[in-house]
Image (cartoon, rainbow, N blue to C red):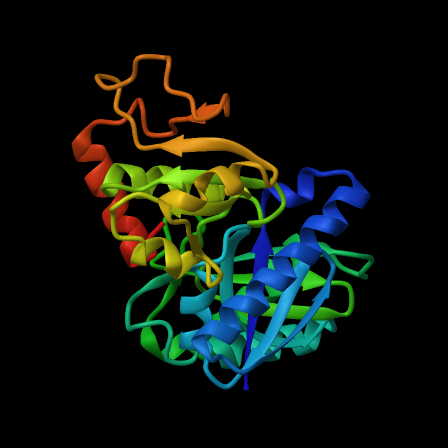
Length: 283
């Protein structure tokens, strides 16, 4: 069973009660995405990290890359925080991950009280990795390595990995209220997506395709025109539009709702490029 370490970003800047509320919402959003994608996993939380155990790491990572609030994930090898155990696990983990003649570096960090420093961990684990792969003619390069091994020690556990997988970041969807978004084209879809990234639940209207947005919100709701007035009365905080700078006249209001135009400063080419990344979950 694989272990996936999940990191968040902006949540960590909040006060303790707000952070807890945001962490709970993020947990719910992750579980909802797993349910939609039929991913079986066990999730725990501790030390400002989510830890996910799963037999389907690729599917799990693909789901996490569509959850707002998740900054990055890594598929990790875990062990205890004992230095000898760390070195043994790091050496074993490096097998097959360094090619002949490549250089490498170890980046270590830790949280908690330990009888060693991060520098000592990096040095000792690096030595173990070097000895494990010495026959390949590898070398150490701390500035521009071909491969980097990361060691993250959090209290009595250690997590070893070699890759950060970038995710959308932002705030957990549902922490910043609801907005109504008009989606008629890619610019409208991207505007809605950007508001979702800022923590808003988005209700969709318009003639455009919302399949990309539904990838990021399993509960995405489309509103028919005759229901818009009822929706506006249900605590909708604003109207999101895909407006370019040439189309904006400053007077576009829907029943006095604030109007948000997150793509107003973007060219059509920039919108197209960013939408391509959104479709591919590439950040």
